[in-house]
Amino acid sequence: MKRNELLNRISKLAKDTNSEWRFLREGSNHSIWTFNEVKIAIPRHVKINEITALGILKECTRLSEAKGDKDDKN
Image (cartoon, rainbow, N blue to C red; front, top):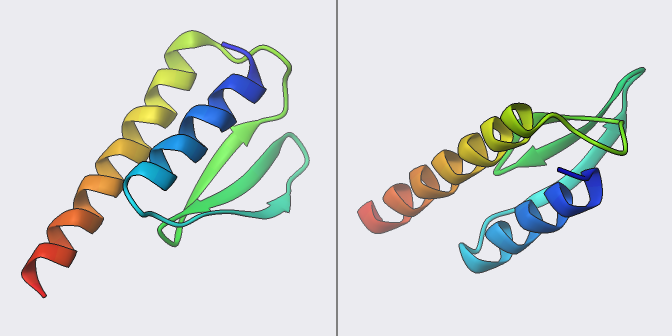
């Protein structure tokens, strides 16, 4: 999966679930982003391994669902 496609999919997920998706900093080999205040490392490669990309998407989906559960309790 291309890096831009991964970032766009996470951005859309954040928008659809009313989650926070922000750039934090550049590391030596990764860009560090936050998804609902949890740090997510995105490799700085044009093409990201499909398994890695799906794992990152799965983690962001889990975090967005956890945020939804928290909002429901309030």
